[in-house]
Image (cartoon, rainbow, N blue to C red; front, side, top):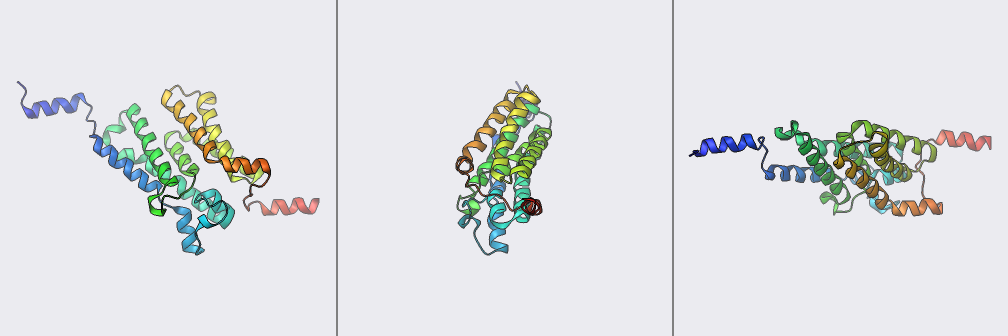
Length: 236
């Protein structure tokens, strides 16, 4: 009969040294707390003595920061919110088991990333009133599918340059993520394909008011490319 030490060793070998679920749950909680960092709120209160949620669309995200505080602070908030998604999604490296098992690693990364996105939308540090999670979602995509994420960033920047609508840029970048995964890169992994569809749906659903304002012509443009607009006005 196997004694306890031998039985324990056999269990670890046959289960690939998989960590106990409590470790994974702890990482998911940490990912949520990282996502909950209210970048735009801290910036608006620290440097402008206002709460960004009392202005513009009332949203605590990069889009409203662009609209209310300008492109410099909007870019800063967007960068930090993207980093939140990257760091939270990459927490899997703290559990060595996931460094060698791609399937389980993908599952955990998606779970960690979504926890960070939920944290951004419902931040515990800011009364559960946050942003729409697009930048953090992009950071999650950077960690999981960096090449596709870079393509989406290119779509975002192109649309922003042409229209100056951050909301429209975010929507089209989210939809393009799905298009890249399903059709252009033709990703075979079912989990990735489901994730891509969920990303597109989430972005569209969280921007319904923005879509309505764009169709009505009342959506605000961000204050960038002022020199280009002045040149156009002079020519006209």
